[in-house]
Amino acid sequence: MERRFMDSQIKGVSTGTTILAVTFNGGVIIGSDSRASIGGYYVSSKTINKLIQVHDRIFCCIAGSLADAQAVTKAAKFQISFHSIQMESPPLVKAAASVLRELCYNNKEELQAGFITAGWDRKKGPQVYTVALGGMLLSQPFTIGGSGSTYIYGYADAKYKPDMSKEECLQFATNALALAMGRDNVSGGVAHLVVITEEGVEHVVIPGDKLPKFHDE
Amino acid sequence: MAAYMSASRLEHAFSTNDFVPEWAQEEVSTGTTIMAVEFNGGVVIGADSRTTTGAYIANRVTDKLTPIHDHIFCCRSGSAADTQAVADAVTYQLGFHSIELDEPPLVETAANLFKQMCYRYREELMAGIIVAGWDKRKGGQVYTVPMGGMIVRQPVSVGGSGSSYIYGFMDSNYKPGMTKEECLHFCTQALALAMERDGSSGGVARLAAITEEGLERRVVLGNQLPKFSNA
Image (cartoon, rainbow over all chains, first blue to last red; front, side, top):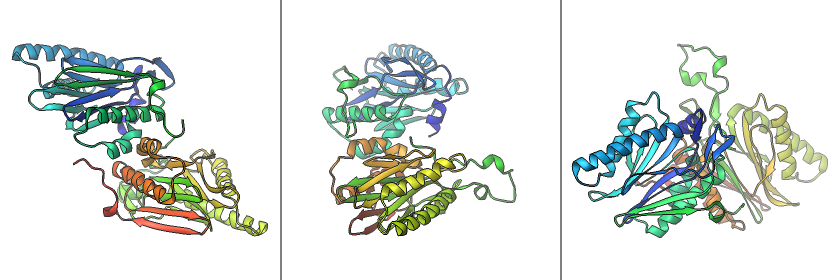
């Protein structure tokens, strides 16, 4: 509830939004809607991409002030590639999440952006990390965020199972996004999904009319 | 639109008093989760059982399912005082009307009585009410009268602070044409999910099924509620 309250106070363009990341057997799916709005009454973009690739197998998705999120991810992307070059190996998902956390925590007074980091690395496989508004870092099997996430807590709690297959996980993520976009006025547009596995990265876009429909639609 | 039901509007009217604990200065609220579902032959209604004054749980076994008439109930959310007062007034009006008509009242009548009161006094009241019941004319019906005093009939409706978290579950799991048992199961699950996530909802899940035959009440205790944790 606190997060939703803060979203509505963001000045300028905000990603009042729905974002999520879910681990499955062998990978992780990260997803979001595509709407950017001002004050909840004007949609400034119907098709923005909130899934930012910060390294080969690591993505993060943004919620909150779009400007803050873009600035932070730009800095984080640089720091993560630098770190990766120094270590001469792909970065750990936890390292990427920690970079975001440092930036969020040290600048907590000025920033209003939260992140979900998800990816795959050799050490721990698929992982999901949340970096909340004040800079808290938390690892979870799956997580949802943004203003639209309020409406799908019940659905996500009921339907998530550990060790799903890729298809089950895609269905879960698509349904969750569709349900949230159906109830939250500042989430909408298309559903962006990225499937990250050891083999690679697959981007799936589901336009609004192809999203699952529910009983009253 | 689900409202943040447990916010106290009267905070600014009271000055901070050191001798009275903070929870006694807050208004008593049924920050809550309530819901109602129509099925062929009746309705199923459900609610949690927590009443809070600020962070203190004033009553952990509240009954928010209030009978208005033999086959008509209402589920109350918002200010406990406001909803009790409105429900009492409507119960009186409806009883009188039913005697005048010499037949059981319609659910739509009860719902409109709630609406009239909630709309007329919308500035003073903080009440979100779901009216549900059975009558001979239209069978099982659910009417929602949220804060502000609108009225709309819906096959399934949720309300209270905990309802925000189960919109997605409700949209994906409700199917038209469910049986009474399926509706009861659906309500139990939805209430359990909301009670898990909403701090102002909790305790036991109270359910009731209203049909032509009459009323059937059930209580699902805390430890018997379905569990969804991934821990």
